[in-house]
Image (cartoon, rainbow, N blue to C red; front, side, top):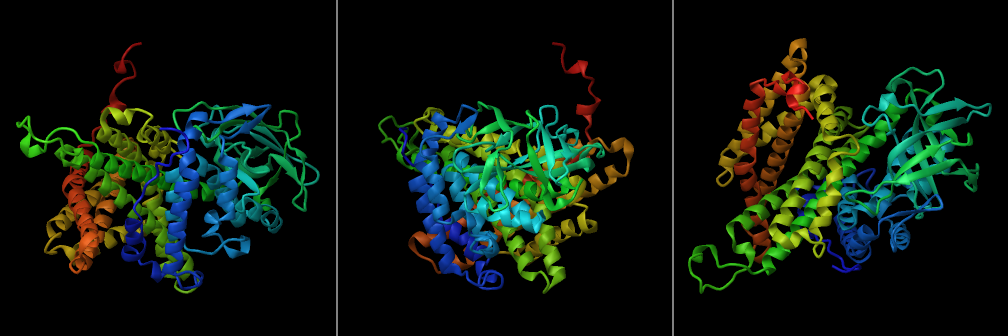
Length: 612
């Protein structure tokens, strides 16, 4: 595959169904604070984003991967074409659809923004990380910064003038953020002298914007150990004057860039702060020792963004595999395997290829629904704030609960489904002539960064399920239960809905088991041993529910449809049935496995693992 060829593909009909038919975009759009938005505006933005993704970002995906980033004279040079794409991205406003008008944005719903991000990431995941990080850092400053910090930084970071990063990880402290050694010494003018090294910093330096604003976790001299003693600082690559003009170097240097398995066009940097004692930062919001709580605001957004990345690559991998399967001819039809004279048929006619494609289709549709559902809760929480505080709290609680599911399930399934796309292609998929090998390499990092998926699992069982006294989890289960009761006897989907009910019972039983273990010190190790399994169970329950919800809608509307529309709605039914029959039974089995309380991984001695 030569450089300059777009391979990104998605199905706008499916996107429109999820946004408008399943999650009722009009329930949010047209109402404050989304008064200016309606279905027509949303459709136009989605269509234009898809055009941009295919024409501008898609052709740079393969070439960017092959060229990668390079470090010259201490500065990162991004692949050819990226600077022009950055300029066009911001000129056309795709990154600011959901940004508040107070910061130069368009004030649109998050439901729309996540679908925009899916297309941008699917076309070029490595490129979209640069503006994505700038967006997240700016949003954090907008929420936590002083009025002066908001005025100076936020709009410039949101409009592409400046980039942004989040700097947590250090050489000796990966997920153990509390062990960070980066230091901050207060200066007479109220600023802080920053010193330390951060590693694995995505977008840590680049030539796309005139400045990069780093958000750096560091410990003020004399502060408490662990995460409680960390503060968050705004540390520009180039110092900034009060009027926004640039004032020269800030003693931030790039030690190296990583040579990676995937996302090679995204610069992953080692950053050194204050090697010459000349790095100056300012405290976010002017408040000491709240750095972790502030950074979590960006991290939660970043975790949702990773789920979007996972969906994006799984989606385009599926549609590329589908196109290939319809075109590639090999072997006779399954009903004529013993007839050597039978004509060769497209491989989509083979049973196992159809199995893989339906598996991919169901997961992609279900994960998209989960993401749009989370975004819907975000929008409704904002819409109801100050009007119906109980309902606003319910929606905020669902966002909290679903975030680890979106991040973990979206990323785990992305790698699996991209690898499965290679399998559909056969040997051709393993070659760079087709895009699925890059999608697979790019997607592996998703389960690792922004908190490994085990961290997400521990966040779910150790924090999120107990939030609001367990009300968020109970309300989620009640929502699933309400759907089950309403559709248990559905003429087409009833059996599948009853399978969903069995999965719900398994999740509830396992949740009670975890609660019991938390109250017994001898059984506490069972919680980290089972956390990943439980997160996956809950994710499968959520996705199964949403696929069946979509199928109920499709069955009702599809009765009057004809032609391509009838086939589309039929596809929604089969996605749900396949998932209910082939994935949801895993939830019941996982619940039985958790009930055995197997602790063999912690009971085995270190030597018994093997002597090397």
